[in-house]
Image (cartoon, rainbow, N blue to C red; front, side):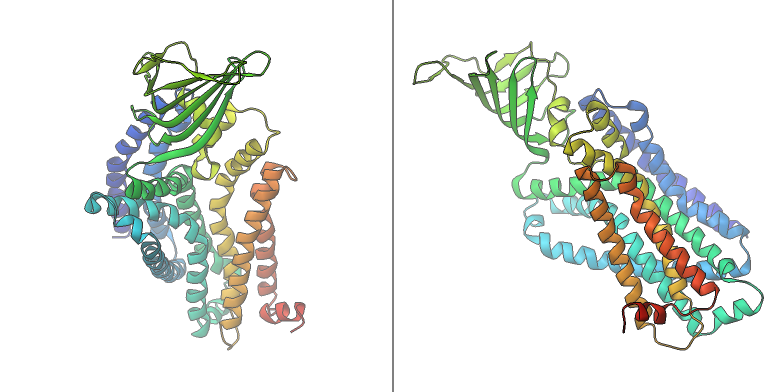
Amino acid sequence: MRFLSFIILLVLGLAAGFFLAPFEEESVRNYLIGFPNADAELHGLRPWAVVALCLVPALGALWYSFASILDRYLFRKTLIAFLITTFGFLLLFVLMDFQDSMSDLTKAANPKKFLPTYYAVLLSQTVVLLLPFTILLGLLYSLGQLSASREIIAFTQTGRGIFRLLRPLVVLGILLSLTSFFLNFHIAPWARGYREALLKSASKGETEQASNVMHHNPVDRRLWFIGGFPYDLSGNSPLVDVQISTRNPDGSLKSRLKSPQVTWDRETGDWIFSKPTRLLVQSEPTADYEKNLPEPLILSDWPETPSQLIQEGLDARYLGIPGIQDWLRNNPDRNTFLSRSFESQYHYRWAQPWLCLVTVLLAAPLGISFARRGRGGTVAVAVILSGLMLFCAEVFLAFGDSGRIPAIPAAWATNGIFLLVALALIQRRLKGRPIFQTIRKCFGS
């Protein structure tokens, strides 16, 4: 009976993982068709990340099976408070999003199929954003209840120190960090971009992965401007509103080819232009349009591929670790703003999940109290610190994008700063010194 919960969660996790992994494998295969230069080995880890995500609850149940009675009690109290808080915030977030997006959602051709897909994508990205805040409020509530009932004092009177009480909370923080990491590996960033594409498809009937993208081929002196890319580059979905300017060796404009829809045949490498028009720029004041262009116009000697063209239009915020790694490998120059932004986001994908653990260490000393006083001040301090954490993360990422600080410190600086703050608060709690009163004195109130 001791391992019953572990066995149940393990079976359910494996079942969910083996059910979801084939869909992710199919997604990886389609991605590699559209992006043949991608790192196949790194993208091959995406299905395993999905399986690992499904097994995180079983890992927590395994630790729970070996834990002591005290650890189980604290873990259970905190977990229940965290789950209630998370469910409440997710429900509130869904209702707010429905109110904001209702005009687009009602335009979907098949709402019964569209709405479950849309909200599954929405929740995938929302969980990563909310985890640090829900664990913060859940910890403050559960530890506040234990402090109010004098259970914390009873625990310490048995000879167990604060660090002993932190152990189950740290385990919960590690489990949540792993959950955030496996989501952040690919699913959550992809869901963030795909949600916007779904909303656009509901209102306009089409999905775009990127829009208004420019690409310069200096060898053949071609400048591409693409109005919109399809979300799935592996199929035959066309690029829309394409305009290609070709220049002479002296830099003057030679011709401009336009087409409302352009497709690329991945088998032959041919570019197929539908309803093409070509403007011939000559030295005379009046320019001529080339007449009798074939319909469709097929060009076989152009080396560009859709995956190369879309690189400049990708947004690092919507790419997971494999996607950002592909972009960085195809764009080795680190002196541009776009390259620095992708590099900072790449390291932030590794740093962001551990904010859950930092939040646990930050909230624990604020939630533990040995005095009979209201919890309003503690909650206010915790909310301010969490807001500062979010603010610092954005500021340091901006510094990394601008090149003022290297990418690795920009991604990990928030974790380091608030880890030091958390350790300072824990030290004051260990010494029995008041935290809230000290913070009030610092601000002169």
